Image (cartoon, rainbow, N blue to C red; front, side):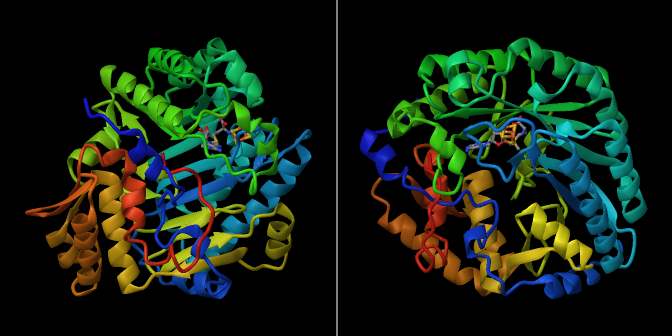
Length: 452
Ligand SMILES: C[S@@+](CC[C@H](N)C(=O)[O-])C[C@H]1O[C@@H](n2cnc3c(N)ncnc32)[C@H](O)[C@@H]1O
Ligand code: SF4
């Protein structure tokens, strides 16, 4: 088993982006606006299937660790008002595209889309069907907070067409749950998963975290054992991102209760080893999947991708984000929606796409983005493929990669016949290695979460 010296872990745990896009979101500016995005939408090829992401920025309890764009609601009325704006945005996007564009994947995230009520799920589905042509075998996934629902609620999500359910677990330990304001029993979690499976949902994902307050090697080990006993098809294992300067409610977490960088690293290794021993294959930096899962199949065929939802087998080139803070990805660039519900409502009342900022993608960016995606997905950089796809624009990226390999004294990154590879020791630090290809990082320093 690979050993990791403490100095290496400390050196490489400095904060860097997660590279779910390149250029990354801190580099988005108001240079991209709704006019740009309108022209990108109307230029979409008629026969190209797209992915949709819908953001539901509400929760009926705020977990103190939460880093998502969400807000606590005590009543349902704000959710219903928000949905009215969302329906406007869906219709406006479809009108701008000029047709009912084919949809291959639909993901509802948040916040907690699991708080949507049956009549609203029905109206959302019919609004989507009027605006888009959702393929009959499209993947429809939704994020569930098992604590805000009962087994009977599951029926309406199955009727909506959900094929993949993603459930937050984080940690089953009572002390950890109390420190993050997320009481969630194992029995309730199992009840919801059973109901989803019974209702025909084919695939279940569970999110688990390390690095939370009061987590120890033992709590992580026990939680992963419990997670495995639920037999999810996928597990996403994230390191807790403590960013109280962005998420004020995280100040409710006593920093003295947080595990240090070395403990975090050990917890991540313990969880990863337990999952792998239980038959899950490691996918990229933070996912684990059963061998038959689409992520494993995509990895073995070299088709694994990374986008704003993390690792995906989604082949679509275009992702259209709907709802506050959602990010769209077009061939020409990225665009993020306004973040507050008030600004979202206002812009849509005016009949405009609610775009706040974004980034266009240059040919060099595209080459760097491909190189970073190759590293984050397969821990290797194929020089021939990069040159084939990006011509002369690959040269500067490959020269940078050669410099990283040349300067590497830690045995993390090496030149090989086909290009470059991240060594076994280098794998946990691939975000940091990828950041060395990032042309923007030094120009515009931003504060990110810890890299490991
Ligand atoms: C939108 S939430 C999941 C759905 C649902 N709201 C829930 O909590 O069960 C998406 C996932 O993001 C992860 N997450 C949220 N805040 C995080 C943070 N500060 N650091 C790392 N992961 C975080 C959690 O694992 C969470 O399950
Ligand atoms: S973790 Fe999930 S349920 Fe908790 S506040 Fe964040 S989005 Fe809401």
